[in-house]
Amino acid sequence: MRSFVAQETERAGNRPERTVYRITDAGWLELTDWLSELLSRPAKEYTHFEAGLCLMPVLPPEDVVTLLEQRCNVLELQAVQAQSVRALLAERHFPRLFSIEGEYRWALEETELKWTRQLIADIKSGQFDGLTYWRGFHAEPAVPRHRRLTTAAGPPNPSLIVA
Image (tube, rainbow, N blue to C red; front, side, top):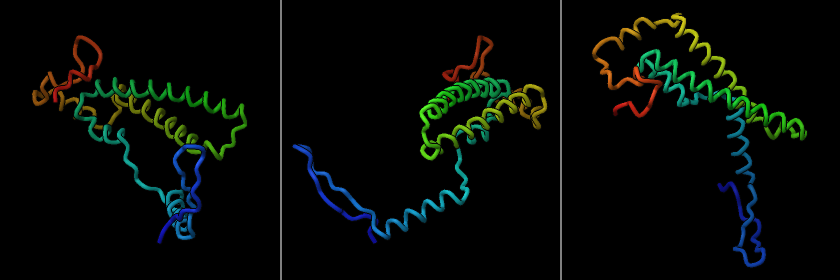
């Protein structure tokens, strides 16, 4: 079954022809089924951040804290930008219907920032479960010094990571 059919073809001036399509009944059913599933069923959507969290023991805890602090800085900037956008939308009486996906994304970013700050605090305070094991892993000679992210000379430098 086709989801769309050509309805008309038109031309404006010397521009190329443009075909306008109409959604079919079968296409409408497929669209509503797909959208219903998207809205009603939670799906596991892995993020790059989750992959990084999964692999964070590869780096020493102090490096992870520094990198998470950098992430928080970016999230804080995004929160300020989002607040400006929300204020502009409110000022212009922009209907929520047309910004709902942004609202959802902002809520996720705010939650991520709060959670990441708590993770940093847990690592720094020593309350992070497994921290002793994690530090011990990096104290062993199995992790060559030249493969670590930080140096005594300064802050983290991703270019120091050897592939």
